[in-house]
Amino acid sequence: MADSVPHSRLTSQARRGSVLVVRQMSTTPKSGEISEKDRVAYEAFIDDFARESDRAAVVLGAAKLDLQLYQILQKVLLPNPSATDDLLDSDAPLSTFSARINLCYRLGLIDRALTRTLHLIRRIRNSFAHEISGSDLASGAHRDRIKELIAPFIGVEDYELYKKTNREKWKFEEGPRLDFRIVLAVAGARLESYYFRAEKCHHDAPWPLIPKQWENKNV
Image (cartoon, rainbow, N blue to C red; front, side, top):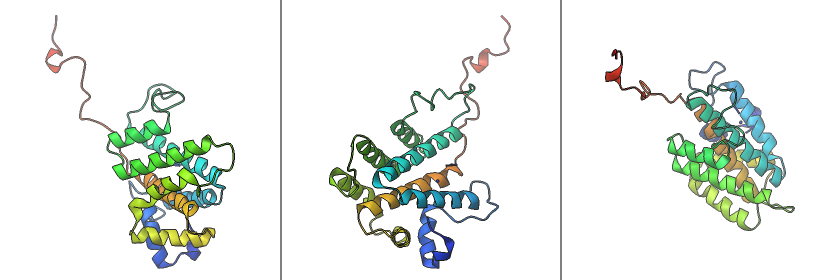
């Protein structure tokens, strides 16, 4: 599956903050739990992503979330019989970031708050894609959207601990640039952990074309 801090520098209090994002697991995880290897890989991705320029961080971070949604949908939907997925790949109906967010919400896989957060990140990504130069998360409409991004976390102690740990590690000043990176890291980690808990959608029996009472009757 694809996506926060070297273990030696994390205090026990700061580790409580990281539990909010990716639960610490043993190297031999139980079914439905993220492995230590995957957790470390996600943290490494976040460290790399956070040190990018604002433009690169927005594009890279949004691409990561889009990929995670793709992987979740691949896992929960019934397998596609052909080599290419006519729902999720290329120009398919669910090939866009927006469509994947909405489907995950409508299937009950993610809640309204996470859905809104993903759409805000998508809108920031789209805005950056249309700006030729000078993209800065601390400017204009980006700053306003980041205020919306952090609103659900106001007063959440573990979020503040996670933010403090990474602010010191990444050497960021308080402000929209740090806030964006922290919220995206949390959103990505929530998707990462959900992937390992997700189960294939299924029914006891798919609804058939031929009514049951018609079966095994000779004409």
